[in-house]
Image (cartoon, rainbow, N blue to C red; front, side):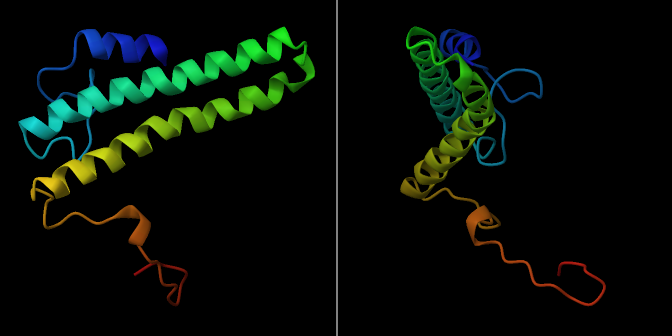
Length: 121
């Protein structure tokens, strides 16, 4: 994670593509949001990668090797956190500039109602 964050910090993606850089609906709203997303994604990848490395080193230095599996299980969360925080930062960035798309649906406010046949509306 730290390596990817460092690469994205040194050489951020210039335009949206599927292979390189951070790409999401909010990041592709305009050029400024795309640049902002590249900076924030690289920062969060570096931050959470550093936290993972520090946790691993602490476990190693304290000889808590039996807790290694717990550290390994947190790795999945540390992959999700940079994405969540980047999206939250992007949303706030676009709200502050009054550029949040009118068709944006906040993922935290999606409500599913069960209907006959177990299908969501």
